Amino acid sequence: MPRHAERSEAPSRLHDRYGPAALVTGASDGIGLAFARRLAEAGFDLVLVARRETVLAEIARDLRGRHGIDVQVLAADPSDGEQARRVAEVASDRDVGLLVAAAGFGTSGPFVDGNLAAELDMIDVNCRALAQVTHAFARRFVERGRGGIILMSSLVAFQGVPRAANYAATKAFVQTLAEGLHAELRPRGVDVLASAPGPVMTGFGRRAAMRIASGQTPDEVAAGSLRVLGRRATVRPGFLAKALETALKPLPRAGRVRMMGRVMAGMTAR
Image (tube, rainbow, N blue to C red; front, side, top):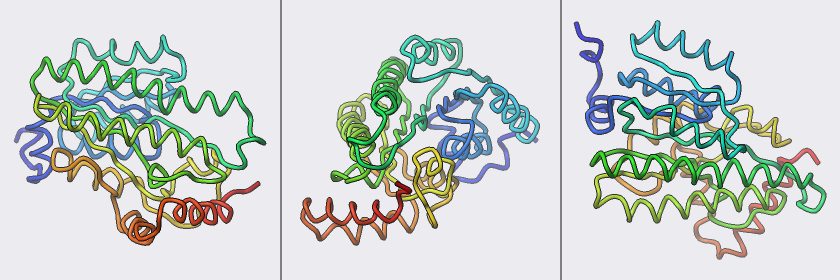
């Protein structure tokens, strides 16, 4: 039996529209790894990008063994412009039709008390590197006549967030970029989706010095995003993201800023 014969209708739709291969950044853990696993189940060959080569190699061995797919890995630091350029080049000999840009990190606490180098590094990773990789693959998909791009936004992208001001600003960039590209590229055969989850139970909270007591699983985010790719511009995957958005939506923007400030004050460790 062919390796894709047992796929369900939803994975088949994804592979038929965006296959045969996908590239995932931030693939060594969390949301990026969840996307990689979901796409492997759908029969995609994969190019996995993250900083930790040994972790990527182990993930690649597991996915090859489980699903019989081809998996290539690239250890790259997206904050380095030259390494970000290599991300597009490494897949030049593969028919990649789907980009999942899941690499990113956050900080928390008062902006004026934070480490400036870390804040600027976050802008490089979350914004500049994302734009660089997205530009390269968007051009390739337009030439190809079809493709899909998923950019990781966040619930914090829709208003300023005290104690995560710079992180929220980077996600506002991602959200706005995705919305514009969705309208630009759809007539040219390329689907763009902003995925805007609420709190997610990953290593993100530890790196950002945030206490996340409950949240969505990375798999909920990946599954919910892939389910609607090509059908809308933005998704808030999972019940929690939708519930939080419903609670914030009636408030004016200034009210949402104050509310998110209270939320962040309870989540930050400093």
